[in-house]
Length: 247
Image (tube, rainbow, N blue to C red):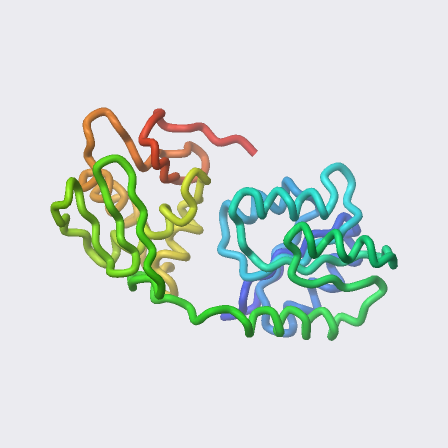
């Protein structure tokens, strides 16, 4: 991992360590926080633990190739922008990548400045960032069991009755709900839910999750599950005990 203070986090996936280090070093110098991965499994480990702004993905990878990774991420509901890198010159490869959900395609060999420019162009098109504890811009409502969680107006109801959810609890639960069915590490959950203040949050996350669970009491159902070795996961069905996650 190469870090740059205050920059957007970029995941750089390439099995060629030299090419990865060269591009990673350049992007780090340009103000990005760069996380390097050599394959799809390494990328998944990063995505579990970090909030990533964009993925730079080599097409020709051993095992699960770039197209398969792109298809899998989109099927899992991960909307993180993806730029595909490839030495393949055929238009069919570029079209296939874009069809699978990639946002851009850069042919090798490339100028690192071009990759940086493409990254910046994509990131400039992002919608304005929401405040961690603030409501969503659109009308976003999630219903599960007897509960209704309205992210647009920041309310939580059970059988129509309003529940008192604090700003911090709302921010944490909003992240969990938006990643329904996917484990989120404690580190990533704190980072996304608490924004710039995440470094000072410490062990307070576990206390807040416990309080959210109390709000969501519904007989034998557990909507927020502990994923041992990772963190927490929102399960809309409320079924199942704690999960042991393996990477």
